[in-house]
Each structure stands twice: as structure tokens, then as C-alpha cells.
Image 1: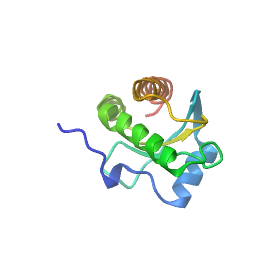
Image 2: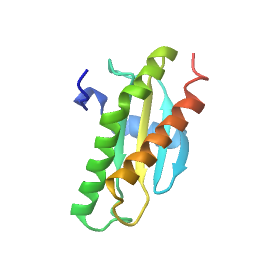
Image 3: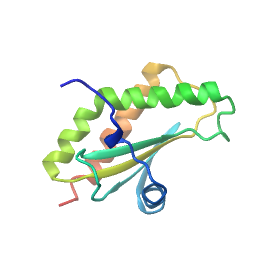
Image 4: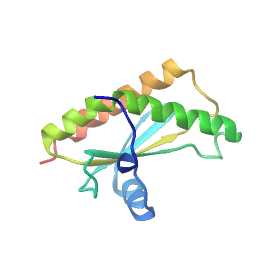
Length: 130
């Protein structure tokens, strides 16, 4: 299967984002914060995700776009790990990843940290859903 990141896998909509941000369970691995919520989604995908890089932390638009692109790429290449676990549990999750650092990270570090963060979140929160 080819790793892709399609429209139905993106978390969008003000109400859904607000619900995930306020009710969801958060985990932190600096410089990332992952907020997730297991809930039924209007999508065939087992998960939907949104990425945010606040202007408050990274002033340059070019750097914000690069950081967001790195986060999406790390997710796209490794999502099959988390999708398998979600499908096994019969759950759907919505995730919001927020970058809280003050500058870009090297690709290898950013990817490793995000993978570990998603692994920890799914391990702790997906097993409890049924």
C-alpha cells in the first residue's frame, strides 16, 4: 500500500477541532504536543489529524510551513502503524499536533519524536476504547 495523506484523513471543521482541543487527552514530547480524542468520525479513515504551528512560536512563515510539512511527512510515512492498532480496536480517533518549539528541528529528530509520541498515545488510549 502506498503511503498517502488524503483529504478524508485531515481533521477540519471548527467544531471538531474545538472538541478535540478542549476534551481530548494530551501528551507532550518537546517540542510537540499531541491532543487526541477517540470519537466517531464522518470518514472511512480510522483517524483524522490536524497540524498547527503557532505564529507566536515561529515568526517566519517559511519556517512554519517547513515544520508543518515535516510533521505531515512523518505522519504519512508511519500512519500504517497507528491505523492497524485503531482498526484492531474498532476505534476512530481525531488528533491535533501542535508545535511548541522556537525553531525548526532536523528531519530525523522531528520524525523520531513524532513517531514516539503517536506510539505512546495509541498505546495508552486506544486499548481502553471499545
